[in-house]
Structure formats: structure tokens, C-alpha cells
Length: 167
View 1 (spheres, rainbow, N blue to C red):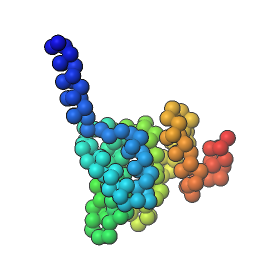
View 2: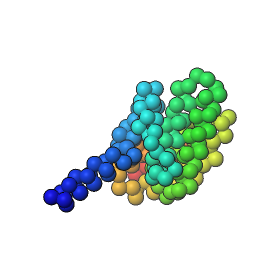
View 3: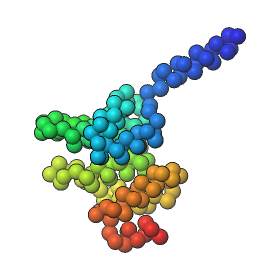
View 4: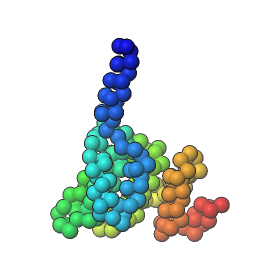
């Protein structure tokens, strides 16, 4: 009886302290937030418990969520604050897990979408090279499809690189 009670209690404690959202829900909200402020708000809320000790992928998504808030803000000061906060989080995630293809994809997607005057575009080329070199090694089919689609539409990929993607 004591063992059963222990396992039930362990189940509740584990569930209640789980601060990490589901990755697929996070990805879906990320995609939707490009077109919907409500989705951007929902993404930020979903990631509100993410801290520096959280997995780097979720730190990166929180940085992206901050930048999405900047997109929908009208106040230039708030826009810039959100941008800076997002940039710090994304770069922290990259530093913690440089070999994570999804983190590198997120940074590539953000940097290729931002206006040049923000000067957050130094890593576009090296992230593109990394993505092209490692795309076939990712086991997550949906992630691979998303990266493939984004790269094939990107003005940062040459015609030759785009042909290699479809080969």
C-alpha cells in the first residue's frame, strides 16, 4: 500500500513540476504566430515558465516568442526591448547547444526575416551551411520537412543549393 501511494504521489509531483511544454504544440504555435497575434501571445504564455536552466531548445523558442511579440507591438521602444530580449535568449540557446539543428533553424528563420537595420544577421550563412549539411541526419520527419520547405523558399539559398535539397 505504501509503495502504491508513493508512486501515485511521485506521478503528481512529476506532473506538477513539469515546466516544459510539449514540443509539437510549441512548434505549431511558432508557425501560427507568424500570421496571428493570438498565437504569438499563446506561444509566449506557453513558454512563460522557461528559465536559464531549461533545455536550450525551449530557451530558443522563448526567444523566438519574444521576437514575435515585437512584431505585433506598435510602440518602437517595446519592439526594440522585445527584440533584444529575444536575441539574448536565442544566442544563449545556440551557445548551450550549437549542434541542435532545430535551434540553428530557428535562428536562421529569425535572422532571415528581420530587417537589416537591426544588425542581427551575422549567422545566416553559417546556419544555412549547417542546415544544408545536417538536414538529412535529423530523425524528426516533420522538422526536416519544415526546414526543407523554408530553405527551398529562402532567398538566401542559391539555385544550386535548392536543387540539392530536392535531390
